[in-house]
Image 1 (tube, rainbow, N blue to C red):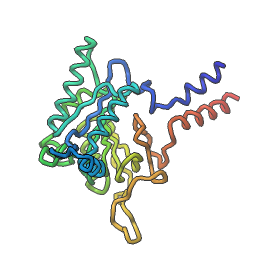
Image 2: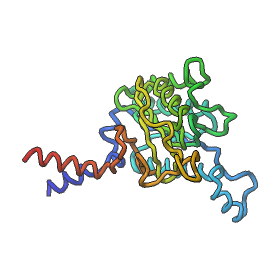
Image 3: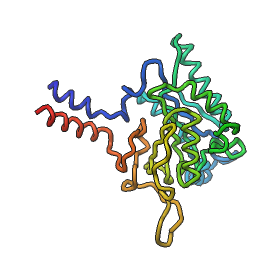
Image 4: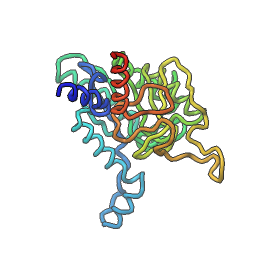
Length: 276
C-alpha cells in the first residue's frame, strides 16, 4: 500500500500542489483585469447573453472566479483586481505587506501571474489609457520601470517567477523585446505566450534574466495558406500548450510540455529502471 501511496504522491502534479514551488514565507499572487464587465444598464437576459460572447465584457467574471478557485485549491494566497498597471503594482506590494503583517516575518513572492489582455509585445491591465506594459515602459526610464524593480525586490530569489497569462505578449520581435525587458526589470524568470490563448494556452515561453529569446519570431502566426500572417489560436497540438487549470508554469524550454502528473510517472519509471 505504501508503494501505491508513493506513486500517487509522485503523480500529484505541481499544478495542484504548492511544494516545493512555494517556500516558507513566500506567497502566490494573481492580478486580474477588473474592467471587462458588462456596460452600465446591461440588465436584461439578452444583454447578459451578448456580453457573455464579448471577451471585453465577460472575462472579469471568469478571471475572478478562476482566482477564487485557485485560492480554494491552495495555490493563490492573494487575488488583486486592477484597472490600471499602477493599481496592479500597488496591490502586489500591499499583498506582500499584508502577509508580513499576518505572519510577523518578511514575505516574498513565489508566483506572480497577470491575467488580462495582450498583443504582440504588450500586456494590458484595463484599457490602454491605464498604461501598457511593453519593453519601452519596462526599460530604464520607462513608465513602469521603477514599479517593476520594486516588485523585483520582493521576489523569492530561487522560486520567484512572473507569468503573463494573456494573448501573444511574447510573439514577434516586439514580443521578444518585451520578454527581455520584463526578465531584466523583474530580475526573475518571465513566462508568456506567443499564441492567442483561451482554455488552452499555447506557445508558453520562458526567459531567464540575461538570456536571449530562443523561439522563432513568427511563432503563433500562420505561415501559409489563406490565413497567412494571421494569429494562431491555441490548440492541444500546438507547441508548448498548457491548460487554464495549470498553476505553475513549465520552466523548461522543450517543445513539448507533458502534463506534470505524467512527467512524474515517467520519472518514477526511469528511477525504477536505474534502481534495478
